[in-house]
Length: 171
Image 1: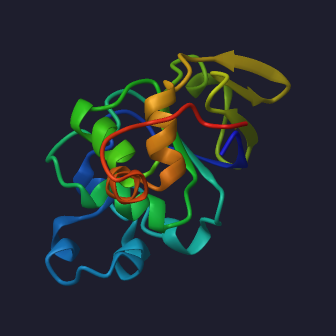
Image 2: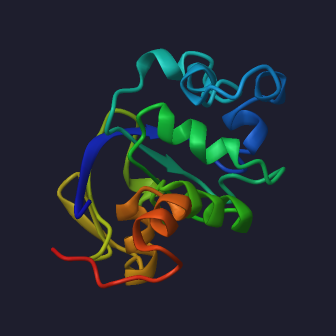
């Protein structure tokens, strides 16, 4: 999980969990692959038909605001998105993302320097993003969160390690 490379899908400020997965769907099924067909529908109705595995979302301020529904980061992950990079995140969305194994990083500078369709490289442990020939930095993901991501989320981390312990990820 050292390098994530993909196409950018750019969204603005205050992308709420209702825009990520509208409430009218979340009670109809618990099949996340089915729910992923409606990912980001409130912000871009055709998103799920255009996104490809490995793509990345770049968001503005307060990404994931609104209700604390855990389905929002799960649906993003199941849509094929490999990570979300935003100016800032709603705190509960930020933590829920790590819990389900979706990498998220705050890199405020990036937003004004990329557009939908750009390709970028994200180095989680190193704290850098390369886009349009420029390098942008962010606070690297700490080793204990990298371990959770590498294991596929908090539940898988617990199952794999027999508890909430972590080891430095190998490179």
